[in-house]
Figure 1: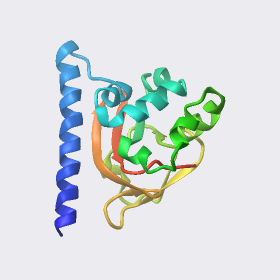
Figure 2: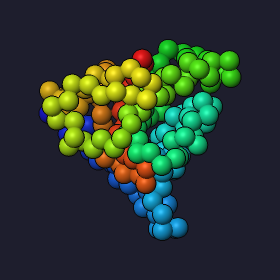
Figure 3: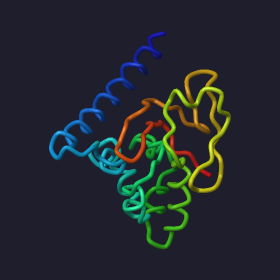
Figure 4: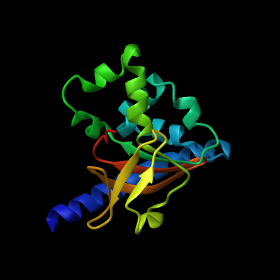
Length: 165
């Protein structure tokens, strides 16, 4: 029970932090930030943002969309075997990095309320992710820890594990 409460508090804090960053961006120019701008404005996504830039996907994910991004935190990337992130960020591994990152993106805007009853969703990568709503929400082996972080071109759901195609 205590663990579930702590998880709920952490998820709420992450959501509020990201929402606060989005509001700060919005307040400054009157325009809601893109999914890339929302992620870039949160230090918990610095590894994801670096990977998106290294893969050459920042411009695409800043486009019209809409996109649903299952965004792994820095802690999620740290769960990968040592050296994995550094290896993926090498220019010669760009295709592999693109494959991993596009597996985290579903075309269209899929809000948390939309996943009830879904068993899978097609990704930009071309391979479907599994969805399990039997105990919270999981995509493949990752738990969704925060949902419905809105951006001008889609929505972000925070996950605790990097999912691999």
